[in-house]
Image 1 (tube, helix red, strand yellow):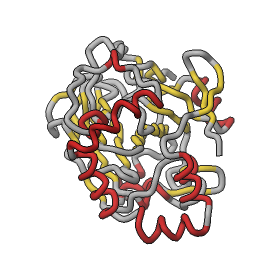
Image 2 (tube, one colour):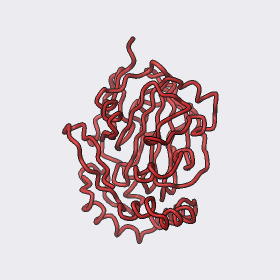
Image 3 (tube, one colour):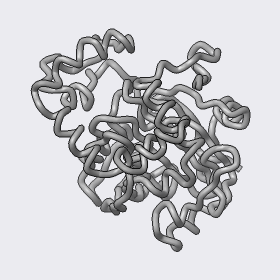
Length: 296
């Protein structure tokens, strides 16, 4: 299965180079693979064991080949003396690697990845892929909070294993403590999303609310995936944060950040909404403008 996305910078469609593509296709598209998935791969113990391997010094030898295969720009790295693969995976970037748009009326991408955008959402029928839906209440386990986002906006950012794997705040404000929900460790790749019903609601996830200066109450949800050893929150709850400040990071694996905005809080750029309607994700990087404050 080819995964095509829209490259916003060059205004063209590209095919994603997928880490472990053959494994993903076999696992999520064959009867034997699905049995192995249910018996082993989705379990916490598998991701935990693989996470331990990525934390050991032996895994360091994977780094050069990974960088070459996926053409990762090493000039962006803050440092190069990685102790193991996870140390490389959660790498920080140097200050010049990303340009954060600081204007109050500009909504920025909170991370590197591929984004889908949905406006005027039905919180009881959120789209996973065509024909598969889930509810916000199922996703966060809180009906009262979910109802605050009726007819609002939903952004789904998919981080590939090749991406920078830290996520950031889209505005200044204060963020609530994180609520944690245990779950499985399915892949969040589009191949998996087409074959596992209510996948986001089944995976391990965490959520919190940013009381922002310019975009009202912003609901952040971080979703783990296969081989993601941890979702690590690095912010301090209820303290002031600035736009672009780091919120947290994912250890090894593809992962997802889902953000909900309340009704009449944000206006997403038209090209992203259009590509989503056409069935394509858009590539974005941290700090890139993706919307503006809502103006009546």
